[in-house]
Amino acid sequence: MNALPLPQFRVFTGEQIDAAIGAGKSAVLDAVEAAYRAHDAGRTVNPESQFLRFPDGQRNRIIALPAHIRERDGEGGVTGIKWISSFPENIERGMPRASAVLILNDAMTGYPMACMEASIISAARTAASAISALRCLAGDARAAKETPRRSLRVAFVGAGVIARHVAECLPLAALPIGEVTVHDLHNDYAVSLANRIRRHPGYEARTEASLERSIRDSDVIVFTTTASSPYLDNPDWFSHCPIVLHLSLRDLAPAIVLASHNVVDDIDHCLRAMTSLHLTELDVGHRRFVTTSLPHLLSGGEPPARDRPIVFSPFGLGILDIAVGRWVYEQLAAQQAPVPRFFYDMQRA
Image (tube, rainbow, N blue to C red):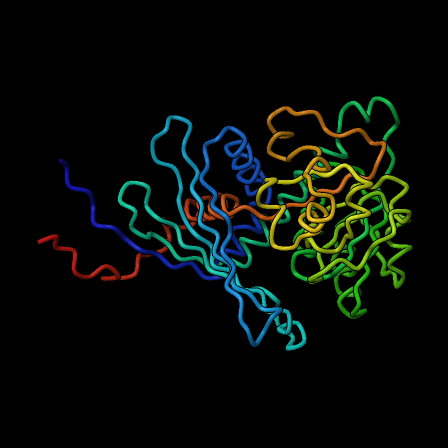
């Protein structure tokens, strides 16, 4: 058996990750969509996320997301795990709610080969997932033929880090975006996000104090809150059949879920951990309210009809993190020296 080169381990900072992803948003979207197609084709291993919770801090959690994507020829692939914490009180401290690291493993030996700051990777893959769903659902060619395209009105509910990343990726949807409104319980956050959006040429943005108006007046609603349980229970607010990018997963009561076409990233992942869809399943005792999945749509499946609201609820699959992490590694590894002597005693006997 031929000897393999000694394993090497590299560390990548948030500054490096941010620069790579900022310059490569389109490539990140491609990596996310390729991971979804691999998932639809059965070339992934994506165990249930493991939640570490704390008896003295019920809102806090740290989640482990292990995952593997196999190459089409069955050889190699990418393997890794994201370790991401969510401490909502960080917001009151003036810090982002989430922090994370991503470990990538060598496909041949299993040795860890990189550690990356991953809150930016997590936000970027979440934004790419949202943009991918928006392209599939609002960019439906059949609908475009039936009615002339008009500018879409977009509302953000929640104005944190995830909302910022989605807003920065809106141009990738290649859809006519008109006015953008931002609603947040903290008006300063809403103002900050609206100002960021206005920096994009051709985009108009303003804040909206009324949650009901934000929803009723918009064609696309992006939920990026820190809600731990549903607070919206009136299906009439959604009677104009918008596309709802339900990224925060716990904003909508079962009555709204049942009145909508529901698109998931993976049904088994989405219907757990007391998400809105999980609560709906507990209420009605079945999963028939789930219409389709984004991986299926990206692999040629038919999108839902536009006769009801369409709610996209992505639980956030670990395969997306490792797909984006591998892309980042490929961009940066050549210019980043490995950590000297990270692996020490390498003698088998």
